[in-house]
Structures are given as structure tokens and as C-alpha cells.
Amino acid sequence: SYCAKGASAPLPCGAGTYSDKTNLDSAGGCEGCPEGHACTTGSVAPVACRSGTFASGSRNAECEPCKAGSYQNATRAAGCVLCGLGSFCPVGASLELPAACEPGTYANVTDGDGLPECFDCPAGSS
Image 1 (spheres, rainbow, N blue to C red):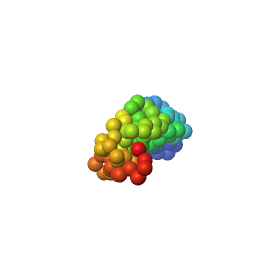
Image 2 (image 1 turned 120 degrees about the vertical axis):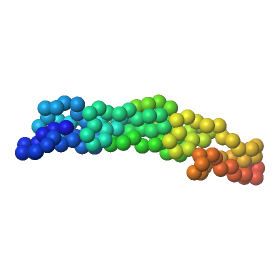
Image 3 (image 1 turned 135 degrees about the vertical axis):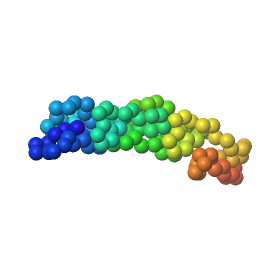
Image 4 (image 1 turned 45 degrees about the horizontal axis):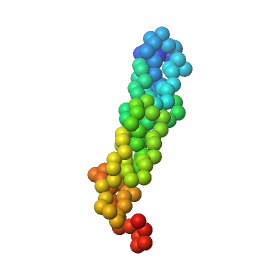
């Protein structure tokens, strides 16, 4: 937090910034949240993004979940990894899951339950 000139109470560092110092006189003393971390309003320290989430660039207020079709198994990540062929990854995945489709079908979409939707392979394909 910081005390602006004339303020009657300390003001918190804004979302995307943090500070554990007590002698700041402006928001300019708050530090930008580093990549792979999130800082909500009033943060005194950055919080690392958990697996399945990421924060690219700096000054992030929150970590975003990996989109369907990607995953992230590390913490403090700046991005997600594309899910490999023969696997599927629902929103917020922290690992690749094996596709559970029968032979002659394929999955390229996951629905709300996180399981793949299986479709018949086109004639003449394998």
C-alpha cells in the first residue's frame, strides 16, 4: 500500500502490481507482477500460477486457464502447450489425457464434462 499526499488512509497497490514496503508515497512505487504470476488489488507478493493456468507478460491481475486443446503441467507458466495427437486436453488441463475413442472414430472436441466427443472417421481414412 501507499499513502498519497493528503490521503487519510493508505491506498492498496492496484491489480497487476504488488508491494511489501510500507513507506511508499505513490502507486508508482508498486512493482509490476512478473510473468507467470498474478497480483490482485492490495497484493504484498506475487502469487505463482498453478498448473493448468498461465499469465503471459507482466502486470497480470489473475492467471488464465489453458484453453481446450492445450495444457500446462508447470507452475509459474507464461503460456500453455498444445495437446499432442491422440490426446485431448479440456479447459484448464494440467496434463495430456489419452483419447478414449473406439477404433474407427476420432476426437477433436471436448464438451463440458471434459471428455472427448468421438466422431466416425471419414470413409477411406484410417
